[in-house]
Length: 175
Ligand SMILES: [Zn+2]
Image (cartoon, rainbow, N blue to C red; front, side, top):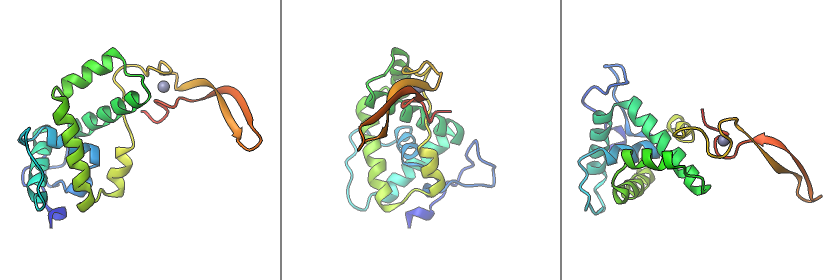
């Protein structure tokens, strides 16, 4: 089955003897690889197309190399987080547009990657990596101090809140 399919070409960022298996890629990395592949813009998913999708993912991985793929996926994840928090900076917007000039393709490859993840699960290690993210430039929320002043809930039943510094909700997990 597709899960065991590996790249037949050496992938930069990996030792030459190692191949990449689809389960070693996070959902975000799969989406970025699809974006970089020959996947046609007007592609429509049909049942049984998994092998073709995987071939495109492997093509994208081979084109980008693991290091760039991982970094791009981490930055894309950071962008989505900032967008959710309504904190996208002009620098982030510009960098994201440079990485993914075709917004529709960007959305579509994310959907296709999620669809494929239903049949080819992500390994624990890749899932863990998928939770880490990077931001372009300083964090728009805390300016990279990693801390924000806020009212923190101590005990919701007692309606007990205390003000103070705590981990920044936007970059708290960013390297
Ligand atoms: Zn921050």
